[in-house]
Length: 482
Image (cartoon, rainbow, N blue to C red; front, side):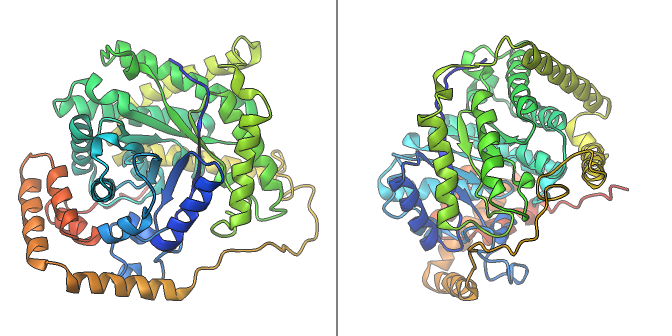
């Protein structure tokens, strides 16, 4: 199923502090961007507050630090949340971060039913590839289906999950593996929602996908085309979806970070442009283009603007937005699409033979498949059967002169102080009461979103809320691959 052609243009604005990210948002919106994306720092992603010992040296290094509702309010100050669509790269603590966004919007006077955006919320790919998990799979799936149900009732325009092949590809998977493993995860979420008592048509229309755009131009286009066909067929024939919206595959695409090179970094502008073109020809609904310097550091203002202009040139100058599925009927593209579809179905069968997605994760099936693919790719580079321009061929002697963004260590110190001041000034009795209520609900079967929202309103921190849930759910420990 396929509908539409124009996409939302996004660039990440996850810089070290909420204040800096807020200024980046305003800059990007002034430059014609139509959607916002937030990248969080590693402590936030892992559910730690900035003053936790494990956060030391990491605060604000790869994204914005969000410790409490206070930071979320700062992040979106003077940005009308009923006028923008916000995508948030958060997985294990997704319910908490989403709750903070909802409450921040309410404080602006924007009711939840008007909010549009996406939380990544894809925990299965964390176990498979990215490794930023907190809880074991079963309680993690409970949080996800609680989000499905809460969004159905109160935030109906929100994309409740972005089922992400991007990170699977970034760890070394092939295009086929990205396709198959991403869709397998998607089907697992559908099955979890149905098992939780939800009607598939109540939550499936708000599922979205997130794919990588790598260097093999036609292979990437075929991957997207095959993904749409597989999703529509399985949703209709296997899961009994009745609504057309449940059959539609709506997906965001980001150009391949793993394809960027430190050597001759300006070449990354060209790589990104071709990758973005493949995503558009393949039918993406939302697009992020990487900046040329992201292999070296967080991007500078100039690099971000070039990446955004790449999208705008595609949208307004090339004419590629004028036709839906323009390569349909091409023998080569149709044959590649069929091969991708057949290969994905073979992988689905292998996953079923392992007992399903969760069992395959526990048996390290996905991890081994990706590791083998990454090894083969690296050997191709080393033997020059795969040419990477500037890396193993067409090399030059160069002193890389490119401005890099440097994070001031004072940022971490000030963020830690901000958390301490918050704890000293808030109503700690109220915080403790909301956390106790959350723990009681976690021990039962109630939807956890209302209790998480109550804790957020009391200015409980990410670390405190996650810590409370850890007391009930425990923490995940990966088994050795070998």
